[in-house]
Image (cartoon, rainbow, N blue to C red; front, side, top):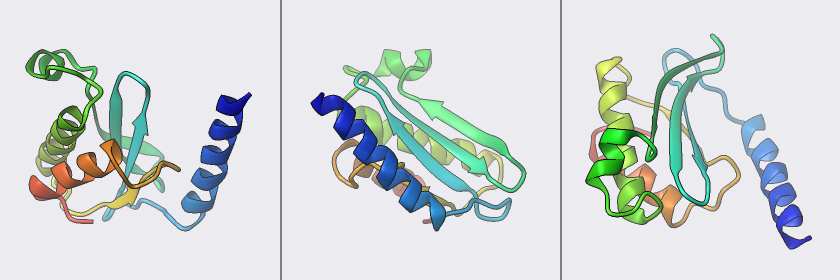
Length: 121
């Protein structure tokens, strides 16, 4: 019962946050999703309704480098990788969408990793 309430609370926060965020072609949205085992990041153009770049700790090449796919180190590496891929697509700045999660722990590590690699938000 507690898990359902937690999920509903996150979804309510997510919808409140998303009302004010919109990714455009010039400044797309960096969306984060975390499961119990992996962390995922996507850069999305909401107006064109397309995912421009995606990355996760579940990818084979990244998974082989990491000791665990669910810790801060993995989240930071996903952030760095998504920023590198964004640079390849000539994306320099994004709007950060924490997707209802608290900006702490793995979500913060992913954001810090992306900033370190040169993505602005």
